[in-house]
Length: 125
Image 1 (cartoon, rainbow, N blue to C red):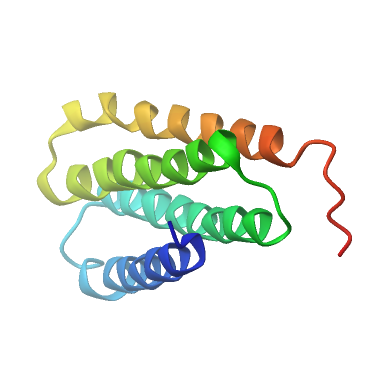
Image 2: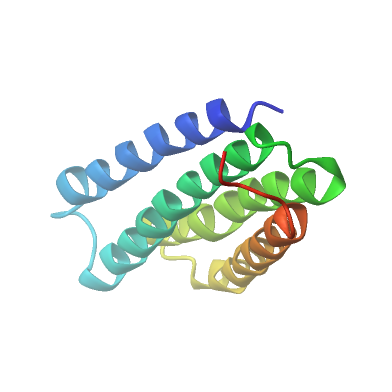
């Protein structure tokens, strides 16, 4: 998987979602729903950047199953965490809040897998 390209696309979507929330939804959503949207966009940016960390790790020779797990877990986290918050903000379906922690757990797995993939590897070059 090309994690740099995936990260770039994820970042473009994050910027668009943040701008849409700040400008297009400000007058349409409740302050609570805007908060959900903002949290989704904020963590979307962080984890789009995390995909660049996966790409960087790949570029310095890290690889294997742990790196693959890391990249996919970051992407799954984006869909479940940020995605559920975006949909919840737009629809008011609060039950989607039960899905959000699945994304957070995926991100934790992704960060741990990235640590495993890069542990003991010289990354100075």
